[in-house]
Image (cartoon, helix red, strand yellow):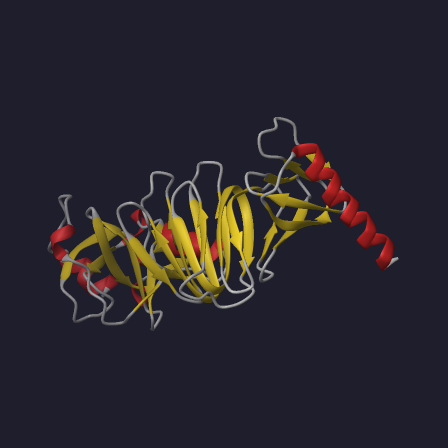
Length: 307
């Protein structure tokens, strides 16, 4: 059976080459789950692939609602796995046993990349998304591109540099980053799943309540030693944007910036796995406040709510 498969693969290679006149072949495409299609460079109609095919520079590989595929590049065996509803384009490939240059685009969907070896100074591997360009060396990392063009990336092993025209950031293992379609990079945050990445950057919905609905004191950092900057009704806190390492304090949007409240001063419901963690000695920049805020809590808030 192996001999038959090899013969069929060679026939497929020669047939595609003669039909499309393509010489810049870059990788093999393996169908892990249907449906998967390839739109060859300089053609307008995609071709469904049932088992495997050879793909090259300019080809766009698309997976359907349940489709999954694996692309293995020549030279060193670098792989990319495409999840359902993903479109992926090979933009450039030049490879030898010693080094290679690879540039691809994730147009939409989710992919996982794994380099076959640590790249030397003569090799490059770049992935373009609508919001940022990613450069990797000896790395396993995942990419997600949403319909809006917003892109996210998680590093599982190695290191990835995320860059736009305006800025760049190194992303280590177990951390992630996002970029809007306009090319604005987020902070680098700890995350191993895209849900955690979203929670760390967008916050988590919470419900906060106090006895007799007294107000909660707000401070510049997660400590009773931090400057007190105001107070707020507990019902106005609906989104947690982080917590302290000790877990005793929550960060939330306040006065055009961020403030902190002590969790023991109120009842807090709601949690998420990826809420961003800040050091216990973290301090907000007091110059960032733009809204009019109360700077002196009333006696009842100080006595009852604490913090």
